[in-house]
Amino acid sequence: MSPTSSRKRSKGVWENGDDPLDYTTDDYAKLVCRHSKTVNALAAVDNTLAFNLVFSMADASHADLDTTLEMCGEDPGETARYFQSLDNLLLPLIKSRQQPAELCWQLLEVPVRWSQRRTRSQDAESDEDLDEWPEPDYERQYWEKCNYEHNRRIARRRRREIFDDWVTVALSDLKDERDYLDIYGITGFFPKSIAELEMIQMQMSTGL
Image (tube, rainbow, N blue to C red):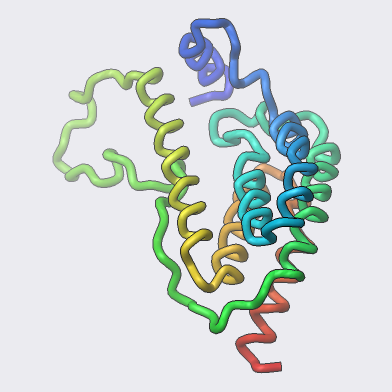
């Protein structure tokens, strides 16, 4: 599906005239940065809650780039600056958090990103006639995707909240988002926090 056709189909989903494709990753990152004061206030009371809040902000800091490349935004540098602000917000929370008793290399599984899941066409039997499939309902698929991604984020958040090895979980989540953004040429996603988590993981695994 081309970016143009995707945009035309999605406009019909929003009856109030508000098109989600009018908002790019720049807008998402800027909006979540507005909660920085809340994070700082929460950190003074509970570092772990502030830590988890920043991760929820990180999950919401970019658009659904699989929909259309237009949602990447026109200025990657601006997005990177917002990501840097979030990175600076998370880094001290990592440093001040107590290390887990031990590392766990087998994480609880969470749903993969919508674009990475297996589709019916991938699982279909070779003798199935794809021409007989009905025309896809793009509006229904849009809302299915929104619901799927919402539940995926909830699963990731719950794993962060209940898993003792917060270092490995946090590193996995940040790298997953970073690699996804890299595909679309968007860089600068939490490099200092990732490096700090990798250092903690290395120190714990080597006993240094």
